[in-house]
Image 1: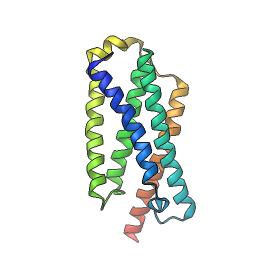
Image 2: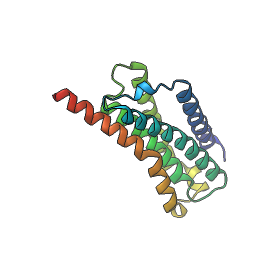
Image 3: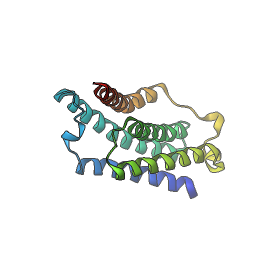
Image 4: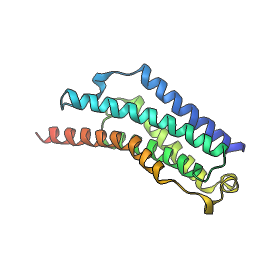
Length: 170
């Protein structure tokens, strides 16, 4: 394993760890306040931490799966990218990043690179030779773990968006 696949795995691992560390450094509970009370603020912070920690674990698991040439490795890497893309896209569309140009620019860059890496995983001959398309699969318990990682953050972003929408009509 080498070339672009190795580069992707290194970037995915560094990106996941760096995101978790930067999130810890910049953590501010008041950033999760969406006008719906204390418990909703706490729910937002917990769902965000669950997302970042879960993505870090998922990236590590995907890397180890690729190293072990397991049939679930491509699906895990795609799942990681899809969760990252979805959360960044939802943040952009919901308006939660409005007024923060650096965060908007970062989200757009993450989305662009995520799409590039998804195309790479789909079209790379190196990936196809390492894990043949006919042998690829994802286990049911992995799907449950992915839902646990991504669903709380998606729900929180959705609730924040709906609350912002309701307040704009009031």
